[in-house]
Image 1 (cartoon, rainbow, N blue to C red):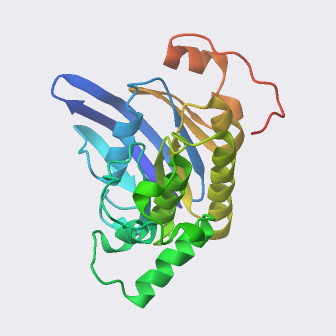
Image 2: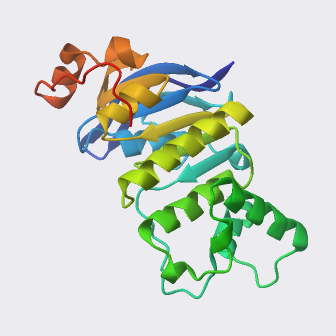
Length: 244
């Protein structure tokens, strides 16, 4: 089964070419790392998968459908948390926006149970009654991850999820994601600038700089040639066997 498929996907914003003829097929239950320099179109690709950006040409399919058809099957963790942290909301209420697509005054018991289960899954059940404004960066990231998982999605899209968290929190997050993937069979697609994460955690890597310079298993596509062509310079080697 195919989780994500793009065929000659091209996205323009006026005269600016953000994506140029990107084609790949990602099987279900895969862990895709999207890598490339700043401005490479990685976030644009995620937005196209979410149905927030329309292709200028080419096609996109998500779980066999047009993007945006079944949002209940997709969890999303944005890079930039636009939520106003001065807003008087609890962590549990933020998680529930992943179910209800908005804020509610009265929380039903069944919805509360879903949110608590999601928070427990990410090791953040103790944060349920804490105000969002009192959360650290790592705690807020866990709450957003619980928000993405609350519907038990088939696909999770993550835009640089390690931003703002420390090394220990980052390791915990990747372990959590891999455990969820193993238990549920879900597909993960994640933007990252950390080449070690891409090399040692992902099952598939897409090397992007408006065009696709490589796609496949990390050991094959993350070679000096592909990286140099995408980034414009050579990258140093990482010794085999190194893990986070």
